[in-house]
Image 1: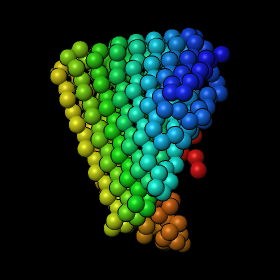
Image 2: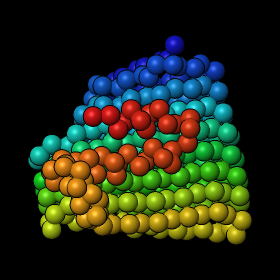
Image 3: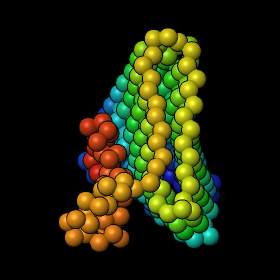
Image 4: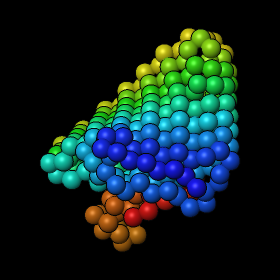
Length: 269
């Protein structure tokens, strides 16, 4: 079994080596600082729905372990939330961070993945819906310090009303990161004249033997698709909802197979 401890400031979760959990572990109680250690060859899915306004998470994934950390948050009006996640992965470790956010307040999210040994794998998948006067700021940092590691991050956001969304994707490959394969893509859909979205990829790459891709796209709903829906008798409001959900669901097309279940679950509802 796993070991779960909590005091006034720090919550700790330890997954012993070689344990495989078929059911997810839920974190529902509020915390300020969360430390998670995944032992060698362990496999686990963690579902974080805690509502505390400030959350700092440190996740250490040991050799050949697999972890899927999924979080789903609703940021209401006049609510501010800060969340920082730092992940370090050892040899052959696999780690997926899955984030689904509905934001009508202020949400600031930073996720940093670091390969501290060769052949580590990361996937960060974020979907966000920003409405009202909501502000959502997301920064994903991929750090590669050792050879033959892989990482990918994808962001899909729908911004409407007077919402504001900003996405920064940082890829940094150190001298020892030869053979790294890494990618960051950000896609933002704006609905309404007051909706604003920005996407900024940042690359810092030292070695030559690296395969790196990045991309960013911001734009409104496809009018041709709305016209197609209208020709099928679908009202405009319903057509917009259908197209928004289809847009966000694209994230499932790119996630690795070992993380696909968590991505699918995050898109429900």
